[in-house]
Amino acid sequence: MIHFDESMELLDNLQITEYRHIKLPLMESIGFFLAEDIVADHNSPEFPTSGMDGYAIKHKDLTLGKLKIASINPAGSDDKNALVGGTCIKTFTGSLMPEGSDTLIPIEYVRVENGHIIINEEVPCGFAVREVGENYTKNEKLIPKGNKIDFSQIGILASLNILEVEVYAKPRVVAISTGSELLDLGEPQTNDSQIRSSNNYTIEAIISKYGGEAVHHRNIKDDRDTIYNALSSALETNDIVVTTGGVSVGDFDFVKDVVYELGCEIVFRGVRVKPGQHIIVARKNNKFIVALPGFAYSATIMALIYLVPLMQKLQQGSFVFPKVKALLKEPFVKRAKKAEFTACNLTIENGQYFVDFYGKKTGTSAIMTNMLGDLALVYTEENDCSKDTGEEIDVVLL
Image (cartoon, rainbow, N blue to C red):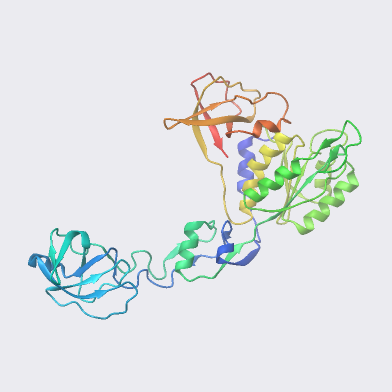
């Protein structure tokens, strides 16, 4: 089994040779990654513009102390009246600055008497004037491709009058749970050994939450031919096939063998990590199989750590869960000489992160209820040791 850091490096270094592009209406593009550079086709603003409500003046006229109001210049007006020395033009936020003016004095700094303004407070030259290109200039690259579209990108795209956006298609990801003991939702239980399938639903939720297109698939039995046919078919129509179960060393763990039989290239198989050490990541051209353990907690953690960045990679994006330092409210017991992800409760007190393990059960990697609550993950490396109350520890934010 390889070191956890090596597995993440192998994942990060994967080269994708072909990406799917689609064109979407602007407001349907939120959450997608840009497949084109966004370059300004004009200056913003195109002309000097007022940044406040006030009076456009020549700065040198401030010494006069009193200026005649020559006209009014509302926002959206195409009034071409030039400013004459000794006068001012009432100008509003967003209005073009009148020709000949160089400064805007706010309405709060003057009082109006008999068609004149009396200047109570002076301002520097150019005050409250938005210069040409203040926001962006023509031919400036504003958003490089590969950026994820969020509200700020939407605002810039709208200001450029872009109605449709070229984006990378979200990867189609199918989650397939293997196990003859599994029952789908609503399926009646006929013997005590049967359990309700949840992994595929958890994985589908992760896919949807973190930028993939989730594809539902029925559970399949622990049968070599069934698994081969299901994975082969799924690879034809999806970008990533995620399996849960069948990757360990049991007599009925066929997934690991089928991955080879399908002609996949193994990116890595087996990582010194807890939970989920039997994970397999394989590829066939630009399509991938992510084979996860069957225990619910293991499958969930491994999907977050490996599947999420892989989905982003297929969209020319990148993703790393943020990590912070926190203080332990109770001792932490290091359970294995492996990289380890341990569910914890995260709180903030007076600007400091704290973690505790209240309500978190110890046992196998099947305890999915440990993922409930104010969840974060304590992360420890292979050579880390147990820690005492008050010591600092790394915490992954989800």
